[in-house]
Length: 163
Image (cartoon, rainbow, N blue to C red):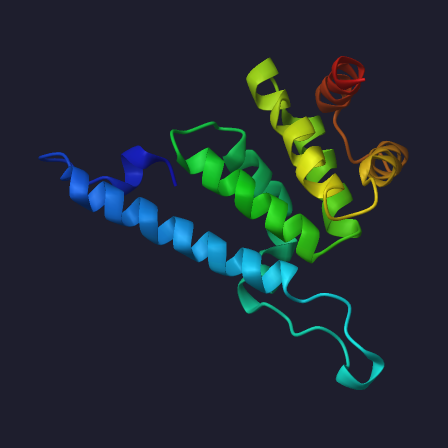
């Protein structure tokens, strides 16, 4: 939600409250990071890696998370971008390609578009290059006719700028 919706009218929040909330969100993201990167490749006897319920619940909402991240609101977009990276790694390879595709398709300014290469760099540190899969996802969306013409034009402009 935008800050205007969740910040009650009246006196502003005390800086200590803001700092406490910032610290809490950072700790939650750190815990998620440990869960995502600590999963590793399981041995055959161990079975599949344990799911992370929070990230499992976010999987169908990658587009919405990208939309919110691209709003570039204060510190919130930094947290959302970090969460998007963790979700992309967690749900790789499809989730990584999907996240990159949506950032490329929805970014409308250079500042917004800059988030796509940043996410790509984070993903390349732990995954095989997800860019070819993101381009394949874009082509699939185009062939399926799921992109309105203005969004298709934006995607192509953004791809040209990034390349």
